[in-house]
Length: 171
Image (cartoon, rainbow, N blue to C red; front, side, top):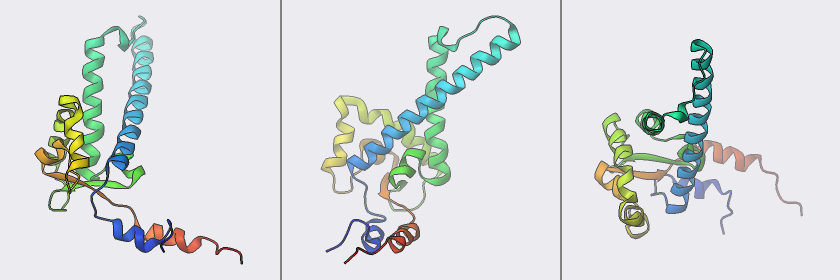
């Protein structure tokens, strides 16, 4: 019987396709971080523009501009780390990584395509995400179109060290 902290089990999962719950957890974390950082940057911009011009300014007064800025920020937040390291902050927290369908690293073009195609998975009431549950390789619609997959990937060495540092049960 293997325990939850068994490093061999953790190592065995590396490279296998990530499930819906894990992917959703990373998505929720990313949404929270995107919103918090955008709100913080918006407040800083409001303060700076007001201080420089002397006139009161709020980004919220321009919904079109703030909407475009938010979408641009969200695309950058997701595409850049995917292109550089294969994972966003939320993906790193839950221990998953985006790779090409053949398991190699994502290129900048594929990472950007994956991010831009992501909204398509929401169309038709989330059918694109339902594919994660239905397909053996757990690839959503945007993964299929971008030629990517999401796999479990964490530092197996760190998992092994945490296991070794655990105290043995008292007898």
